[in-house]
Length: 419
Image (tube, rainbow, N blue to C red; front, side, top):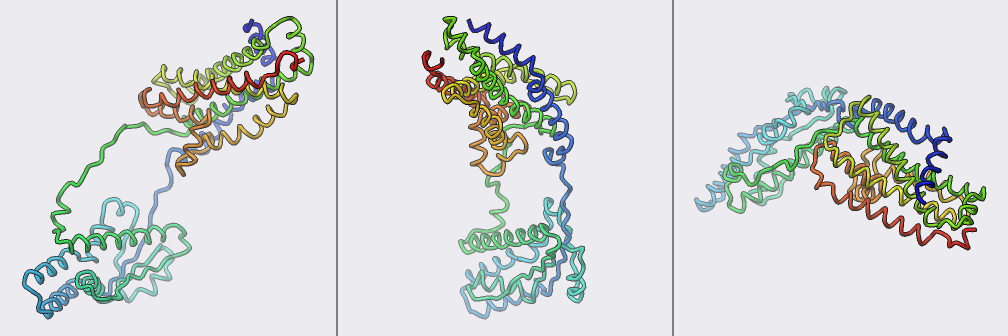
């Protein structure tokens, strides 16, 4: 008895061009607009960072180290302690470390252009808007650092940083580099005081980094093909539940009940109608995007299972919306879901932007929405992950659909109440 109801819902939808445009044409238009407009943002093709920094050094590091040697010898320490302090001073060399190991590293050289400038040009450099920041090293800086770190004497040696506020984020980058440098120097000092030779620490492999999965990057068209598809699938649930309530208003549902047809057949018809229409919609959307935008699915089995479980979940949502509409005798539940909840779910699920990457909390909430779980699974399939890696999303979608369907059964009015 369910098949006639499915046929009825399909015919109603086909005779409603506005709904067809919303469910099929609108997502394709949005995929094209967002995919081409935001291609650089999603693909990470942002403009390269280029930070120009002036470096002014008033000190002479080697002279400071020699002065530190004399200071240590004047203390009359045991030979072993004296040797250890001299070795520690020779290893620290803060200015050399800052220039060679920090700003001279391969990673920073790609984004930071460090220019060593004579101290007489400081005022000119501060007025030059092309520089993002100016680093000024005071006299006897290294001597002060070594005295403080190795002899536990107070020191006022500080690096001065002049930031060009007009550059906004770039001076903050330089500030963060100097803060991390300070932390590094503190760690090196602690290690040196513990009696560990810094050369030994640097020469050993304390660990290694391995890539768990080599994933293919997602481009904007792929991202929005999935994002718009999993968002607009939710409109099917609100549309069909609205059609069902209008049938109740037109006494169609009452005539069905009077014909001795089970109300569960009617509710089951809604559930399967939503599922079938959702599967057809997804097939059309992904078919067009594969032909027009070259969004290719290599793992067809995983693609089919994810979409089937997503359609099952949306079918449960459609059944529950229908049951609640009949229970409160109003179309408001469907309207609220279509106008408000779909937007919230799309936001949390990342249909418009990968907001789940900002915080773990939003990412977790997004994966608890049916569209978010489906989108996470499909994007991972596009990146080439194994089906086993996304099986928990599939099980969640099936469980979500069962919970929605169970809630619909308990919410649907009894035979007497329905009429």
